Image (spheres, rainbow, N blue to C red):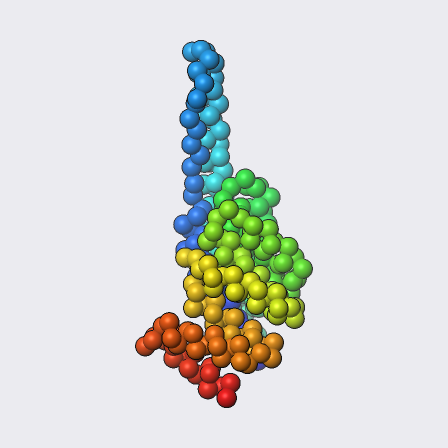
Length: 241
């Protein structure tokens, strides 16, 4: 039960950490510059078409952003203790799986309705997370793989970090280790080097490679002296002895 609780807390923290990334990347603009002037009438038609396209896409992403915020709030709705009924006016869920299922439907609607927006890309990332929370690792892997090929480096890093967790949950530690190594070599704003190193070391431990885990923890100590990360690395090293 304690391990399950720690996992849920970790998922909650991870979900909250990605909210700021979602907000930062949810809005965008499309720029167009005419290079050929084929006459006043043709130019007027081109400008009108571009303006209309920009307006439509911008409106779509604004709508998608609003719905994305609502879905993320659903994903962060509190869980109530077992046997306790929901209190009117204070939304809650009986289980993490129920919460993930409700949010999953909202994220799916965003990807279906606004497929050409950046908000849709973010929603697809959350589709991967909620699929994993619902126990559907195959769907989680499919969605996260799609986002991991995104042109947005920060969103790509988030997807790879989550995908590595899916690999670990399906006893594919070697694949998880490969992903973590790539993220360590190329950190992103959304996925820091130290956080990835911690997960990498834990994966080595789970793969019965204590020497590799020690090496990573020692590197964390060396690179981050007098920090909480170094203290945690020290504690984990002691557990390995």
